[in-house]
Image (tube, rainbow, N blue to C red; front, side, top):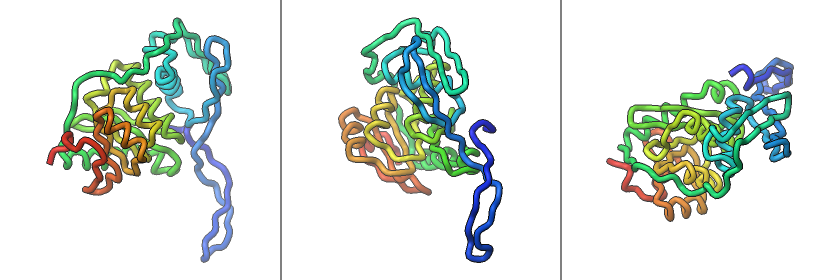
Length: 234
């Protein structure tokens, strides 16, 4: 976690003490130029942990690779990331097929509680989104980043690197569910989404069309079900 934070002097104000200078912890944001086969592909700004998973997940979402085995090498040098691909595959953006999932409402609220407690980095800085995958027994993996999209890419990169099927897993999010996030989850094959925050209209439409169950405002023992409530058992 150390690379994800830095310490800097800032000032704070309170009515009792006025303006005071002190040393505080700040979430670290880094920007990298990503070169694919020696060509500049994208500039990514992110929390600098699990960069390999971030790149694997991102390149897969972009349709450049099917798995991490399509990556010949990945080199990190200062603010440059060099990725060499064995192949450049296109057209692999179909939703993943696999087994389905359902879960009781009580377990879903318990999982969200565990999810929100899982990130020491968020507790320390308040500056990251947290995304997790879980099964009926508990959390399986969590990833953090300043960007919601990056955190999802890191999670998918982990799944590709470890051969984890996503279609029978529960996806948990600290942030809102938008159209772009939903498209990533569709690509991963996710069927059950639980978010602490809001769900947008376009995200709801995609979920409805693709038979994905989406829960929003999951706080305490309550949540809203926006699509396909049959996966939530009472």
